[in-house]
Length: 394
Image (cartoon, rainbow, N blue to C red; front, side, top):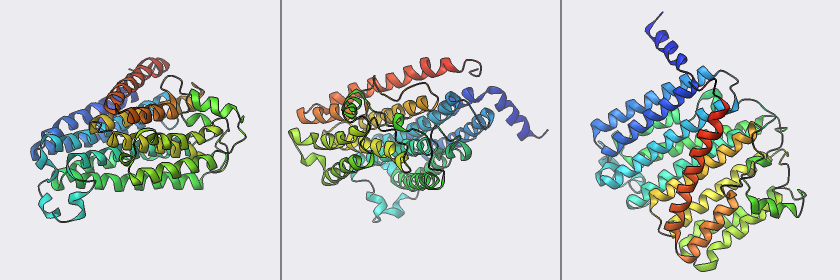
C-alpha cells in the first residue's frame, strides 16, 4: 500500500464528524497566523488552509454519497466557518498592521483599482470581508434550494465547497499582493461558484417540493401571511421589497434618518404575504436566497450607517447566515417546520436593526443580537444536531 493510501485510510477511520472539526482547527490555525501579517506567517497559513481542504475532502469521502442530513450539515457548516475565520483574519490583519494590505509585490498595484477596492482604509477591507461571507452562505443556501426536498444530493457535496479553492488562493494572494487583491480573487471565485449553482437550478427538474420552510420566516411574517392563506405568489411582493431596499442601499442608508430608516423593512414585509405559499413553482427556489440576500444587505448597510464596529457587523452577518442554513437543513431533514421562532426570523432581525438605527443604538443592538445568535447557533449545533448522530460522532 502506498504512503498516500495509508494516510487516506487513517483519515477515513477518524469519521466524517471528527474530520470536519479538524478542518475547522486548521482554519483557526491559519487565521491566527494571518493576523501576524508577515511573509513567514502567511506561508504557514497557506499550508494550514491547504490541509483544511484535504481534511474536508476526506470527511466528505468518509461520509459517502448519501449521508444523513445531520452529517451533511456538519460538514457544510464547518467549511463555511473555516471561510469566516480566514476572511475575518485577513481583514483584522489590516487593522493590526496597516502595511499588511500591500503584500510582497503589493506596490505593483499602486494606482490601480485594486489599491482602493472596497473603499478607503480598514473599513473598506472589512466591507470586502462581509461581502465574501455573504457570498459563502448565499451559495450554500442556493444549493440547498436548488436541490429541494424532492431531489437528492447537492453540487457542493459532489464537487466540494468552493472554499476548498478560495481559501488557498486567497492566502497566496495575501502573501503576494495583499488583502484587497485576496478579496478580489475571493469575490470573483465566489460569484463563479454562485453562477454555477444557479445554472444547476435552471437545468434541474422544476419539481423540487415545497420550499417555504427555507425562507426563515419568523412569527411576524407567518402572522402576516396567514391573512391571505398562501394565495399570494412569492415573487411579486418580493420584487417590490428588493427594488426599494436595493435603491436605498445604493443611495446610502446613512443619508436617511429617523423613521425613514425603516422604509426598507416596510417594503420587505410585503414578502411576508407569501409566507404560507408552498413555493413549489418553477422559479420559486430563488425566493429564499433573494429574501435572505436582502436581509444581509440591510444589516450590512445599517451597520455602516449606524457606525457599528466593522468586525461586529461581520459577526452578525455570519451568525445570521449560519442560522438560515441551520434552519434549511433542519427542514431538509424533516426536523423543523421552517418557522424561526427563537431567532426572530428575517423580518424580526430587520425590524430590530431598523429601530436601533432610528434611535441611534446600532452598536449596542448589534452586539446583543450577534451574541444571542452565535449562542443560538452553537447551542442548536451541540444539543440539537449532535444528539442525532451519536453512532457516527466519534
